[in-house]
Image (cartoon, rainbow, N blue to C red; front, side, top):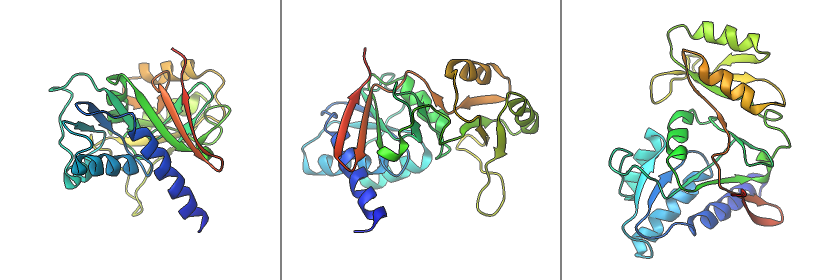
Length: 234
């Protein structure tokens, strides 16, 4: 088995472990990414077999919505169901306190809205995503409105980051489901996450950022030694 195939097998096992936390009657947040899709497919299988019933999902991206509909998962919205019982999502980088960098899939805004509405935010990753300090492996994605995006890039640069406008393969700027741009902001290892998150949140023109602090309740890690389930202390 190739390294990629082994990694995918571990991701699938971890995602299926996360799905064991889903019970009939729940509202489930449907996350984005290569690991989260395994969870969505498993939920669909359990609904089809009758092992789960009365599940409704809230997708964190338009492409997730399309896949969930294709798989037959009933969907709802946060207007109809204000509280999400459990969300299963991925992450780009995770620190020992279960703080996250997310947004590699350009869905950080919807992912954060769903996460903050969730009683339980379950993050599923492979062990390569674990990091002693956020920013060691991954730049912070920052979603900005198109108007004046260059001004936001210059301001974030003044904070000490290397800033790159995320582009599509054809060279055009990538746009989010909301029609915004993504700036990938490399701060390096971040000593004070709260300070950086606060500064980014207060800047007009920045819609949101990929620092998810204090939102994850559970971390399920797939590694060479198997599956680990870590819970954030209450």
